[in-house]
Length: 367
Image (cartoon, rainbow, N blue to C red; front, side, top):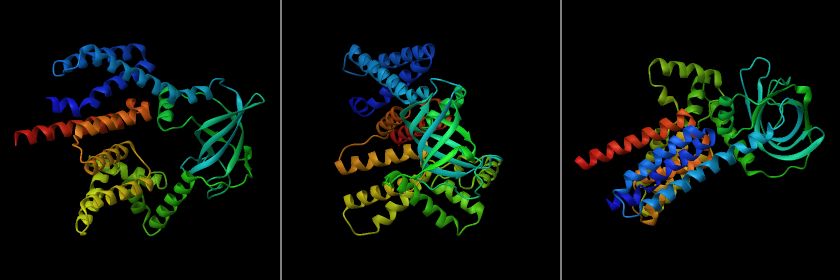
């Protein structure tokens, strides 16, 4: 039992973090979750040598940490909408672009905010927003890294459900802007690693998909690199067909895809006569490179973190428990983006993975 206690402790911190996040959004629901977490600690107390008070205090500390993480994630969003129905001027840098199927506003930019002018007062502001514009250009009107000033943006706080989605995606808002209100600002060019990486990633995808048909390009972008915006219309058509046959989960890039890719890489590396640790290091570097050239999803992030933790344990010659790694991964994901807790992709990805790990463990024990 001490073996289970040592390697499954993160699983008991996850309910505390989840209770703290729920406590931030709903006092009643959060209180119930806190009581249930305390009950789980009580049940665990029968199999542990530590005192009940000590473990309860640790769980409450994790609850406070979860509450603070939710507060820090939502604070910029509510600061932006502190004064609604006011027109503001936004200044920021273009970090992403995609062509969408909107009839009037087909160009969508992701803008990294730097300044916001409201009621004649200019303040520094950090965060990202989506800007939909009806620019007359049929192609991308502004290059990545271009600084734009957008006038006459009317702040209107979105509904709670959509607001949670925006915050979870790391966005502060989504606005429509006429092309006449957008002004390009000439500033000295400075190197930005994230912009450079995004340009390389997009250029590589374009070079590959130019050799494919639109449907093939949509499949490749969605399954291999997680990009579903470049060929959005084709992606929606393919998703409908996948749903019809009941295999839509295959179309979503998940841990299964990265497991297959990493498995192929390891198989090829094991054919090369080189030290075992060197093969693990090479596989780790290739996995990181693949992650940098991909558009991340929650399932992909979970699989990648668990893969990196497993390789670290191999190189450090430490025992690794899959449940232990899943618990640590869940903690990291919730602390980085607490609002993932309310969305189905996070719930299904982590819950089903935990259930499969537990079932496989029980089968292995019986054998």
